[in-house]
Image 1 (cartoon, one colour):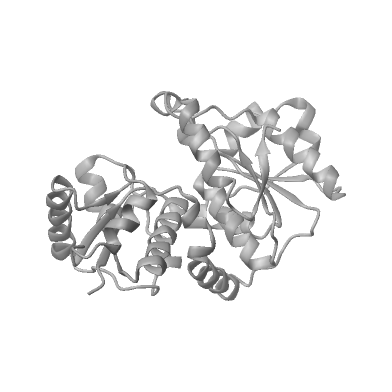
Image 2: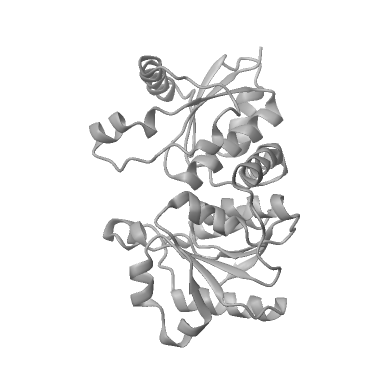
Length: 296
C-alpha cells in the first residue's frame, strides 16, 4: 500500500509553495498520497512559540486533502516527533535520493511526516509541473492576470528580515547595486527600454539604500500586500530574483503562465557558508527557467 505523506506547512508564501511542490514531486515518483497539515501556520502555534504569524496561502486550497481539526493536527504533530526519533520522518537533513528510497522500500510505513523547506530542484522541475500548472491556471482565472511587455524586467529585492543580525550570520548580504546592475545588463540584451520594476518587502529601506546612479532607472511598484507583490512578479517574463523562494516560485509560475523557458536571473550567493552556496547553485542550475546567476 502506498504511503500517506503528511506535509506540515511552514513559513511564508514562497516557502509554502515550494514545500507543497516538493511533496507533489515525491507523489509522482513514488505513488505516495499527500495530506496537508497547517498546524504550524496557526495563530495558536505562533502565540505559543512567540513567532510571527504566517498566513496560509489560499492558492493551495483544494489541491489535496487536509488535516482540518486542530486536535487531530496536534495529534499528528506528536506522531511526527515520535517518528523523527525513530528515523521515520522526512526532513531537510535527508537527501532527495534517501527520501525516495525510503518511500519505495518494501517496509515503508503507511504514514510518514514531511517537514522542511525543501529548496531543491525537484520542487521546481518537471516532477512538480502538474502542481505549478494547476497553480498558474488558478491564478490566471482568479486574478485575470496579464503579462508585462516582453522587455520589461522585474527585480525582487529582499530586505526586511535579512537585515536582522541573527539572519546576517546565516544568509549572504544582497548588494542592491549589483542586483540592479545585473538587471540593467539583462534589459539591454533583451532590447528593453522600460524602467526596472522593483518589488521589495521594505520599500522605505530600499529608497534609503538605493544608489543614486540607479534611481532614474527604477520604478518602485511594491505594495503592502505580499500576495499582490507575488502576482506582480509573476506577471513579468523576466525576473531578477533575490536569495528567496518567494521570487524563485514567482519565476517558476511566470514560466508556466507565459510559456517562457528562461525567466529568472538567480542570486549566486544565498548563504555565508560558501559550501552551502555551491550546493544551492547545483540545485538551481538544473532548472529550465533559470537564465544565469548574478552577480555575473
